[in-house]
Length: 296
Image (tube, rainbow, N blue to C red; front, side, top):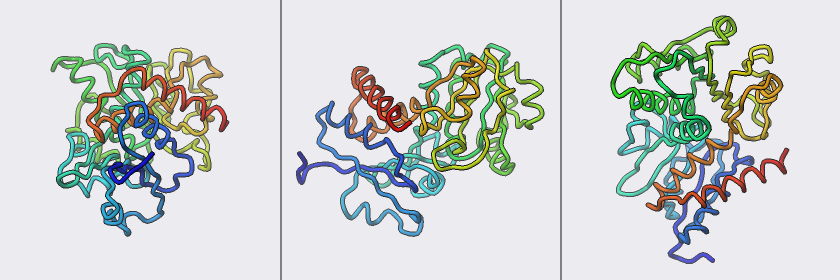
């Protein structure tokens, strides 16, 4: 039941026919008994429309998905450190101005650490490969950097993080944003294939493989090894072609919807001020998996 006191939240982006965010937030509102509703605001031209229509109907906060994360950052009257560093935000909170936040990185890193905390151990010589250089990659790379620095306690570490992407300007922007660290490298496809055994964690951040997006996977089946762990953040379909390649070579796979889950959990906490209980997280995870399985 909704009333005049019901707080309105939602998601902006285009297209949004695939989005699972309403399931996450409305389920959490119900479990926490928070008087809120989460709606879908789909438009192909949000930068032209602006956010005034949302403010006029009393929207308290929004999730922002591709292709508007960089634009969302520019709207913030204050920004979190991740947003400031990577110039991209996936969350806007309308309270005493506009608070621009990036929870993508937190969602991705929580997913990885929950699966195997050793994958982000700064003191091992294996490498992390990030595929792509867009808004999601930026947030994820920031949080990976923060995690490695935190775990190394300020000391130099051995692990390297590599970026494979076509947009060289975006790659350079990432390097500058992170302070040109020595542990971060841009690599070519040929280098990746030649040194494939050095990688432990692969994080795919591009839309390739998403339902309705055409294009061959960035990496071929021959790349994958049993020692690899693939985290493809595309979650619709449940198994992308890249994931199928990895599974056929016995690589381990972190489900893409785990990032959606954990970044959404963090958004819920920011929207409401309520810390999500583990039992709630488990219920939402089960719901997402069930929905995606039916969409297969």
